[in-house]
Length: 72
Image 1: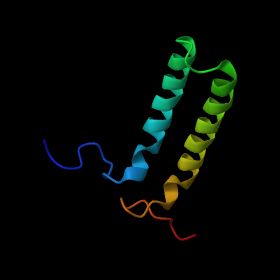
Image 2 (image 1 turned 180 degrees about the vertical axis):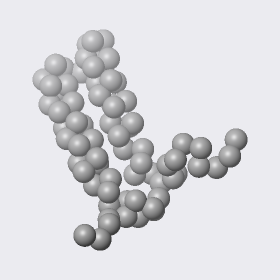
Image 3 (image 1 turned 90 degrees about the horizontal axis):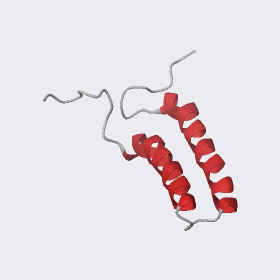
């Protein structure tokens, strides 16, 4: 295996989107098992989607992997 195979650096902020998706799935699973209330899940998953959207918007500002903001 060679380095850079996935085209993404190992910075922690690149793991936010997969983590949010995992948390959404976990929230729905825990609701189905009766551990979380439906009102908590109804509030939690939109918040996690907002975090994902904000991360996607700021993706162009990443300087650690060569995706810094371009001059206009």
